[in-house]
Image (cartoon, rainbow, N blue to C red; front, side, top):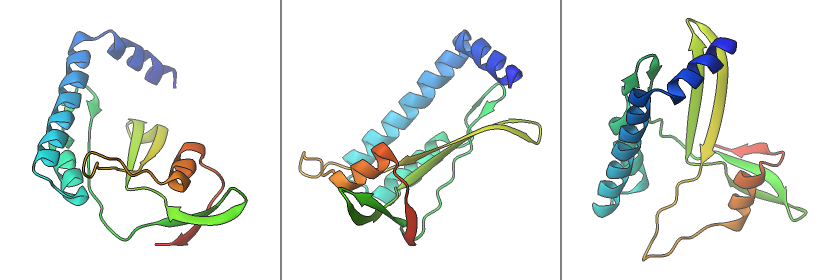
Length: 142
């Protein structure tokens, strides 16, 4: 793990890596803007984003992006003392740090995508509770 932290510290001072991060963020931002302007649906937006960032790399940092589309995954949890069922999320971003074939670190971020409709955002308070607090839950369906 010491090697990973040293490498991350070196990258944080590397102007080339800083440019890589900014260019990657700009590519993602541009793709999202183009997709919204074209009024793409959620699946098309994610497809465009995956295609835009997949294969980007800097030194030993690489991005492999894939879209896996299937049935929704619902979980059950307690919200205000009552069982509630909600979709777990729309997207999972999995970050893995490896050294050869050895996995050193892995993180998963679950994202619920939202798209404004008529300049308004619809946020389900129960789903927000799930993703913000990550209470104990069980698989329900999907």
